[in-house]
Length: 500
Image (cartoon, rainbow, N blue to C red):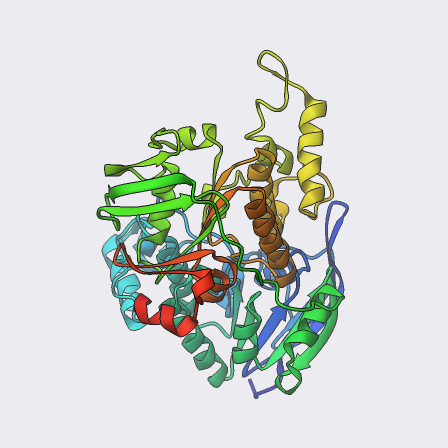
């Protein structure tokens, strides 16, 4: 299509989920040759409108045009064939299948002779696609379950690119990627725009939106607040449009408060099946201990090992009283918490309700008599967290999979906050959440620190680590490459030198 001509037009679109209004009379245009950003707080409607365009959801009312023609896809497969691809926010792969099977799911007929599908031909086609994209380290016959989160997301990108899309929707994908993965995705976005195609880019990272987008459409509470061209990009203005108020100052810590000498958690020369060899650290009472590094440095494995999810082959993880943590059940019994980077598969029961998720650790607090649960106590227990964390929901009985990414993360926080955990291991806790929710999460971390709780903050965002940590450790190849205290000054360039 000619550059700057509308390739997707959304006209007076509304979408309701029961009594919840996700979209309210939304209209906008996405143009050929542009990277168009969609931005808004969690629950603003970004993923909903994108899912309607890509055939994952039906609208309640309104219409769409695609290349000037009426567009109402029956499903995602129809959209793919028509040239609209989408990389979803959360898990878009199926664990028990292979990489090739995921890439060609629904299109196995491409490799069939009669009723039989040639796995050999399918694997060869998938591997060629991966190789051409510079992803040769991912093997087409590998099981998805054996891949880490970043590799699974790269498989989703490859799947979308196989169909040579005219429109590529990228929904909160960069938060699952290392810098190398992000660079690959940014290059693909620029290539598609240069070819006169359209990229719809959803992100909470204002810096990357401003850097890569030609235009921004701002949503708030299911309504389009406004559209900005690149010349009008201003971070303060965008934030004000997103949340309806001025966000003043920096939402990171400004203090240099210390922490107690008391050690509450210790890893003593631990070795795991992968990543860690004779690794040691100490966490103190009232400390926010930052852990950073490149994606495969071992920091995510460390978080799981501290909580008893990852098997420790040698050495030990122990508490102040000498209790060894070898299983997650022991960690929970000793008031430890773990927020996984991969919240949908490791932190939440998506098919369960908000109430069931938050109350899942509240058995002791909500008992009535013997094994019986008091539903009145349980409801109050859950309602308190919904109020405290401002979880947007029509009812606590709604399933978690109906929530936005940020509200899902609030449910995870609520589960552990209600259980009054004393030691929290947070692995990328602000992944996929907006600036307003981030500010609330950071404030909550500081409050917990001042209450004497201890936090291990694992993050791939250097500014988050610099802004929140009392002490910061940089890992490389499963070892501590650098360690420094907040009061001695934490600088981005210094940290990057030790990461690479």
